[in-house]
Amino acid sequence: MRGGYDAIGTGSREGKYIQIKGRTIFNDKKSGQRVGQIKMEQDWDSVMLILMNEDYEAQAIYEADRETLVDAMAETSEKRAKRGAMSVAKFKAVSARVWSVDDVTEENFPDEQAS
Image (cartoon, rainbow, N blue to C red; front, side, top):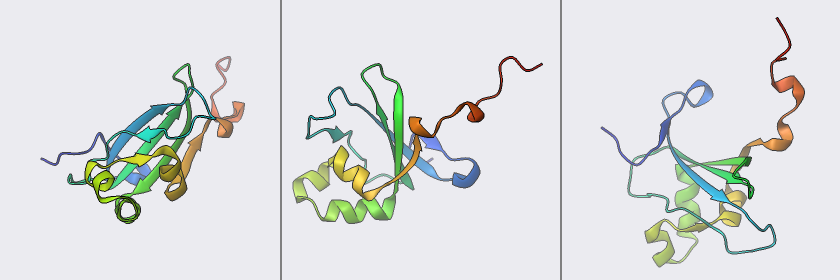
């Protein structure tokens, strides 16, 4: 059994092992927010970061693959890299936004009134 992942992908991510991290942003102006520890020594394919507002509602989801994160960690201090520590800003810079609350429209949801 593999460890170090929280979900197994479906659809376009079929069979991919994904770590999921969440961060609540209470103040957009506050810098230095950190992503939870990324388990670099474990076996996984990508990491998804879910950013939430002060009401714990998802606002955006970013995803980065293992190779991208390994490269990004190589650019940081050895101590931080060893801990799997990365700032939210750095994660956003090296990842792709795969979902945003701004992407949600009424067309994305089934009509609850439909029979």
